[in-house]
Amino acid sequence: MVKSIPSVWDETRVLPPSEIGELAIYAQRKGTTWFLSVINGVQPKTIKIPLSFLGTGNYNTLILNDNPGNPASAKVSNGISQASDVISIDLGVGGGFMTRFILK
Image 1 (tube, one colour):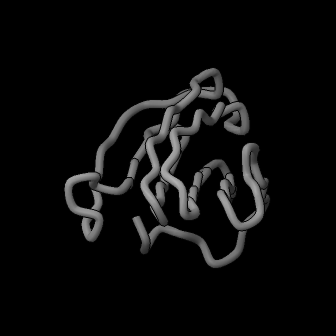
Image 2: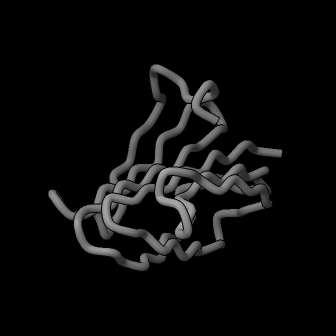
């Protein structure tokens, strides 16, 4: 996933419930591909993020998130997403989450 991250974006959006010093959530687009990045602060939390920033259609999804059993590692999974979906993310202290959405 890291090698696929563009160095320049066509669009960047800061999403709610981002809060300075607590939680940062960014949706960034290059062409028709979107990346969703989440960085958590010092309190564990569960957040829900609507994927309404995605355009119409189905997106192949690559998900990279923290492994709760081993904070030094990450879990990787795949799926299909669309703009009507809402994802729920469990974040540990200083945890993170990243998803890449590629239009099918």
